[in-house]
Length: 207
Length: 289
Image 1 (cartoon, rainbow over the protein chains, first blue to last red):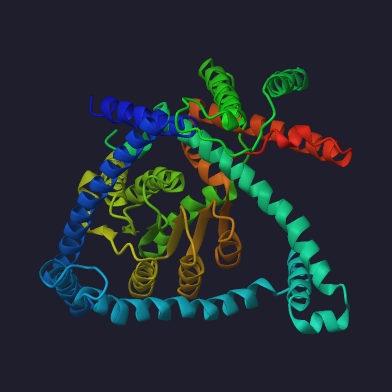
Image 2 (cartoon, each protein chain N blue to C red):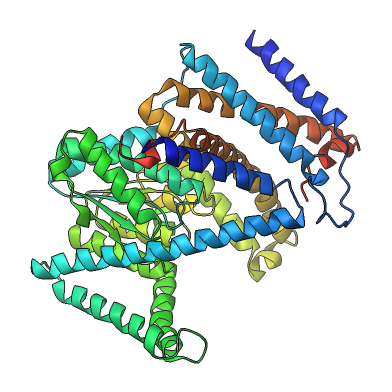
């Protein structure tokens, strides 16, 4: 029963949401919306589990004096600091202390991380464009053509350069991309069917 | 015989196409309707696709042997785990940043179970940083089950499945920290990735780890191809459970997907020819509102 009940729930939920695609009736859509709200409540409870996981992992690290344990202390203090601000100091809406801390601490830190991506792209591109095989040569030549075509100097060199670049992006590039997308979509549908019918049950665990 | 069966299935599909009415995209109020007529094409396709998969699963159950091509990326997982074992370093498994309702995350959980079984057999630590709270219990259960299947339930360490953050870049920073501090010898990245993909893959490359990645998010695939040793592309991610388990029922569903793909290629070719000849009715039928 430990497996049959989850599989039955999964099957019914899957069929339920498949029907949503085909039944536009207002009353039925309101049922779908209600069930979606149940899912939101479940996710909220999952956050409790996640916080428990953070506390357990980091407390163990502090207890065992593991390397970098002071950072774990900072993490736990920050976690409780934000929870306290959210619960006892006006909530999490616009203009609250929680909101201010989020936009003046978390937000700039995230922007900094995102900005680092430029350097990662540069180092990855350097490796990608090293011509060692025929495929790498094709990649490098195509990339150079696309780059030139997308900057003003490309049009100066040849009037039709931007159009040529667009052709590369819209025909050979898009064809390859769509082929992968079609394959992935079919794989996703097939996996969903296996999960719904209980053929694929490894994700449930507890064999 | 195979060709005849294929043609038969194609004609069956085309027959349904012809009896179904062409679509009209006129705005109309469907809030009192029990069926959306603009999605009849989608319904037919789903029924047809499900029927093919069920047919192949049934064939596989009857004992018909089914060939599945080699997927280098999935074979490389064992090599990566073996290398980590030789070096006495941990294995890092990153299941993407989306929730468990996303099919790529489900596929990643399936692979995680197999990886857990391998690392348990080799007695190598496995770290699983998680981005979404709903994924935490599933990942814990999969890893625990993997250790139990390998006969080593005592070796399972709950603290190695870690919730990091559901903020994308906070998660990326957390995982990069694990890579730089613990220096895993193998980084396995499967699931749905976005802008953090290159950050993780490049940091893993800098630490010298062997890296295997798989995603169906096509915009992230080039990054993985550049920075990882092996990349599992698109549908291969979803083929992983069948490939790794070699279970006939799962292999059957793969065959069904392949046949559907062949039919879609046929339809694309036919559509291209008809469009070139100025006949647009056929391609319009496939539009979805």
